[in-house]
Length: 199
Image 1 (cartoon, rainbow, N blue to C red):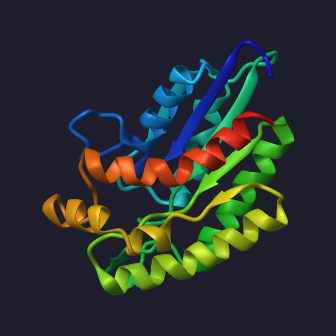
Image 2: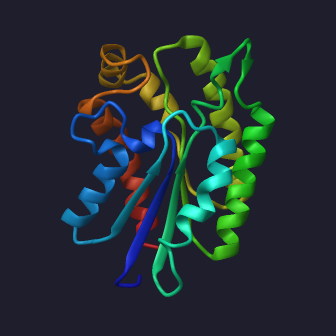
Image 3: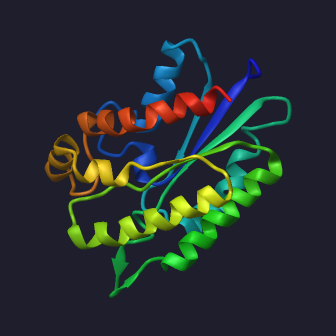
C-alpha cells in the first residue's frame, strides 16, 4: 500500500450521511476508524442526495480524476440504488435493467483506471413496497459485482432485521437514520472495508 491512500466515496444521500447530526454517515465513520487503526487516508465524500445510478455514472469520473492522480493508492467505494427503485408517476426512476447496466459500466470504467472498488448495497427504508424493489436490485447488484470480481457488502437484509436502524429511520424522514443507525450500518461494512484496504 502506498503512503498516500485516497478513497472516493461515490453515491447518494446515504453516502453523504443525510440525517446524521455528526455529519459522518457510514463513509465518514469508516474513514475515522481507519485513522484510529493506523491506516491514514484522504477521504472524499461524493454523495449527492436523490441521485440515481444514471446521474452518478455521468459525474463520477470528472469528480474522481483530480482526486485520484497517478502515483497514489487510489480507491473507490460505490453505493446507490434506493433512488433508482423509487417510484415517481407510477414507474421507477430507473429501471432495474438500466441500474444494473450502469453499475456494470462503472465497474468497467474504474477497472480501466486500475482503481479497486468496494460496493455497498442499498439499505432499506420505511416503505415495504419500496424495499421489495430495492432487495431485488440488491440481488442483481451482487451478481454483477461477483462477475466483475468486486467485493459487495450485503447490508440490505441485515438492516431489514435491525431494530435500531428501523427505529432511527422511522424517527427521521422515513429513509435516513440518525447517528445510531449509521453506527449499525458501519459495523456491517467495517470487516469487508478493512479486508479491502489491506489488499
